[in-house]
Amino acid sequence: MSEAVPLAHALVARLAELEDVRILFIKGPTAVALGARPPRPSTDVDVLCEPGGLERLGPALERCGWRRRVPESLTARFQHASIYMFEHSVHYIQEEWPCDLDIHYNFPGFLAPDEVVFEELWRRGTTIEVAHWPVPCADFLGQSAIVALHRLRDGQAGNTSPDLDFVATSLAQQGPTTIGALAHLAAATGSTETLRPLLERLGAPKVESAVDPELVRRWQVRQQNAGAHTTSWLIELRLRPWREKPALVWRALFLPPDALFSTHVGMPRSRRNIVRLQLQRWSRAVRYLRRGIRASRGAEERV
Amino acid sequence: MTQAESVWSRTAGVASVDDGHRVVLLALHSAVVNQPVILVGPARLIWHALKGGASPRQIARSIMDGESEADGRIAAQAQEFLQHLEDLGLAQLRAGTPSTTAGQQPG
Image 1 (cartoon, rainbow over the protein chains, first blue to last red):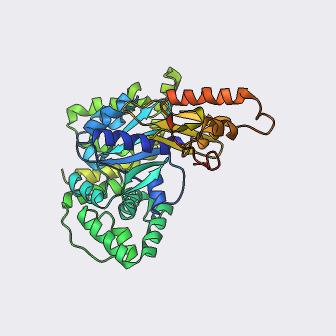
Image 2: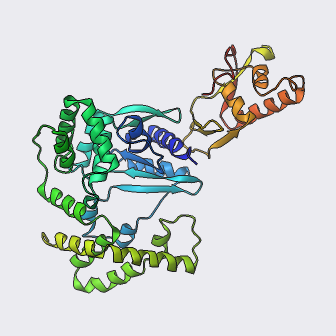
Image 3: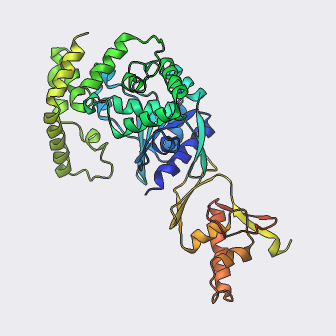
């Protein structure tokens, strides 16, 4: 249902308005409309919510039948790996809507405090019509930074991708003033380091900004190695005390059905499907094993 | 007020997407939002006729072809459908002047 994503934009915008919560739509159709992402259909709705706003927006969504999808990481309560995963959003699903809502309380790669980042993006935000409904969204520069960070957070994919190339071309076409503004936005949101590949590619001016070097190191560990669930489990396993390791290994190997099915809404909870999903996880784990071991070593270096 | 002076129009607070074959509507008047409503065929045409306001006669005409114009059943069905839209909070009946372009342009 191609209508679901635009209508869900309108729904979330309306509920946020009723709850007096400031939100900005990011990525998806708003980024496409502003020329920060190549046109393609979206399968979910991405929203950046003001700090603390989720406490009001979440219940409003739940009153309309949406519920939180339980992320695998939370069911396992990663104490150590979570700082490398840059957990950033809560997923909401609704059986009768064929799209997810991804409500962000921050966006990975913006390393300034959440409230500083939101205020900066909000200050320069704009409004566009989606489904004949006005929705607030990040402006072209904000969307460009977000689309780029989304691509750059997985260093394994390299510093080029269709989205990143598109953003770079769009920014370059806007000229040096826009590129300079992007450098200032990056400085204000603590993303000068994380956006460096894009800024260098554009020949952006250097703008001084102070970012906690430990956050930059964590970003680099995540970017280089820690993009997959397997790596999170391995980081956690490496850093937990020995007495806790056996239980964690057991949990990693045999995830509870609630967590297994949380990303497969609608799939019957049969024994056959449980086995199938576990096998899929193990297969993925084998594929990402080397990367995970590298990440866990990287994480251990500063502990 | 005569029947000719009654105008059906869309209510404010409705999000919509039209892909050229069907229109999907979502009423956003309250904090508890129901499921989207899908309109196809004549129902979609009626939705378009409501843009800017239209009299019951204009709305019925928007879904009639030449042969069926004399058939009162079409007008009655259109009226029934409009009342259904009203129950769903998607359309409203008010006194006013119908749009001269009712039913001519999708939107």
